[in-house]
Amino acid sequence: MATNTKQSDPKPLDELFHDMLKDVYYAEKQILKALPKMAKAATSPELKKAFETHKAETEGQIERLGDVFELIGKAPRGKTCDAILGILDEGKAVMEDYAGSPALDAGLVASAQAVEHYEIARYGTLKAWAAQLGHKDAVKLLDETLAEETKTDKALTQLGGPANKAAVAKAA
Image 1: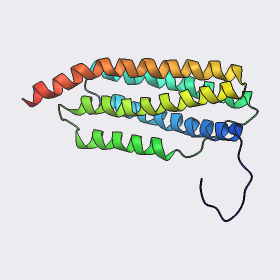
Image 2: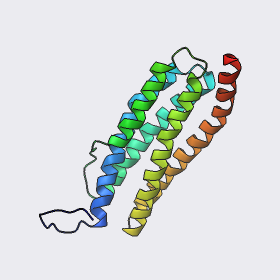
Image 3: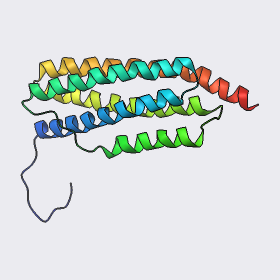
């Protein structure tokens, strides 16, 4: 427990749920800005298409989050998410450091999977908390997004195999 000289009231789970909802809302908006850059940087047509497809999904996920905010009686608002900013910065570094390299696509897949794993963790937690708080409609919306993120992660894993092999073959 954090040591604090000022005694404060304990914060309830619904407040934590709202805070994390704001966090993931911000994260999704940042991801939406990053995906076209990743698509442009990718050399594999399949990887480009995967990023473009996920951009459209992300737009829908942001809308769904807006619906979740509405269900809990809050306005959709983001809160700076340092975690996603760090993950996206790493992705930018890959695009800069490996531009023109045979390893670029492999690095893009790894960067995108870091984003997906963060989102999977957040949506899984939000879904569990929504269930605990009795927000049944929110559970359905969050589960829909969680399923999309999981599907995207699996697609990236499949694209990673050829990207990794191409990086090794071109380097040899």
